[in-house]
Amino acid sequence: MLFEGEKVYFCTARDKDFYAQLMRDGNVAVTGMNREYQMIRLRGKARRLDDQKLWIDRIFAENPSMNSVYPDDSRYVLEPFY
Image 1 (cartoon, rainbow, N blue to C red):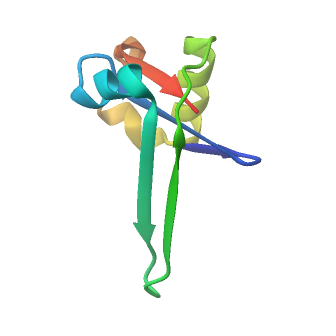
Image 2: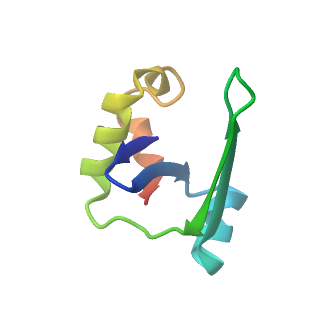
């Protein structure tokens, strides 16, 4: 993920059910909790980003551990959203 201003950028693979759901209606929700049991819930409509390669590269720059899952150009099976 990548955070800029009030936007959360994320990606998913085009062959995943989650991708199909996003393309169908765009609704997304994320819930998290920290060690102090403080919770956050984000929900809204996801939108595809136009410059796919640019955003995937930016997301990977902020999350280098993703390189072990999607090395080199295999990362471009992912599609970025905000």
